[in-house]
Image (cartoon, rainbow, N blue to C red):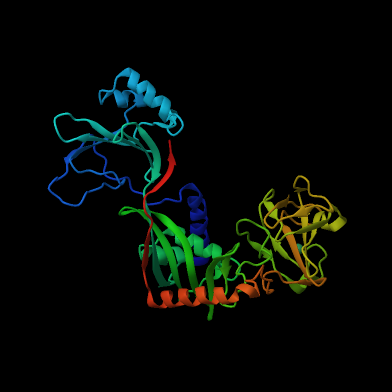
Length: 429
Ligand SMILES: [Zn+2]
């Protein structure tokens, strides 16, 4: 019960994760037209969060109203129609005028003296990006920029009591972090079978804009102790290599998926050397795993390979066979139908839909019979040790070992680090 509850939650944040990667991105305090005159007696120049000097400047914050255009915004600051025309002509390459939306923030910088000359107008596209109209020089400068994104690497750890999600969120961690960890360890750990007492430790990035949390970044290293074994995954990015590796530099990603479905499906009959057959009414080996998935459920190729068979074949019903490499091949039985283009000789990729669950051939109801063959012998796909995909090449093992040891040290010491990037100007007119 506990574990299926975990999966339910996990599915929710898989979907959730797709919707927004910038959770908790609380809007900053929004106020209509707040004026602040900055103290001019300070000796060092002051800049606001956008890197614009604010000495002797009155800063006014606004929010775009319904039907407010760039024309109306500029009109508010006493630009003449001719001036507005030439500004919009110049800004056209950088500002998408159709993208000025109600609720968007903008900021005006006026001289603090009686002239109230406009030095800058800044339009915020989103919490990260903005466009600046700058009249400080003789001619108008227009540029697009992004606020500095601060990356903090933080450590988190916990013991599983109920689910990974609950444990992480009880410590104020992001549900996305649970999602990332489940993805990283999807090939090693059966998340249906998490046990109270399993534990984890993780070092990951948190992104901030100013003081506001913007979202989570990469998981740098994660350890997961599960049923007496400790699994480790180190993020390693170097010379075209980018992935998670074990302490020995093996990929944590397996070349084959554990099951041919996107989401978990109930196993209705396990792999067995001797099973009572409900139709044949005698004991015969069951050389595959039956999944009681709803009819029409997409079936995925568990690994890259070549289709060797896709046809109706007696008791098997509609069958697809895939050869993955010289060691492994798989078979999928009783399909309602084949995915478009699936026929012998066609190459498929891991995760590609090859057909749909049905009950063709000798079947008591809709289900998928899935068989994995290792060196032409059927093996239990749920218990067999599946092969890893590409490892760190020997030539990079020294570099990898350094990265791994440094991550280990930081993980063990719970060292938080902060990396700040400067404001980035992305486009200049
Ligand atoms: Zn079966």
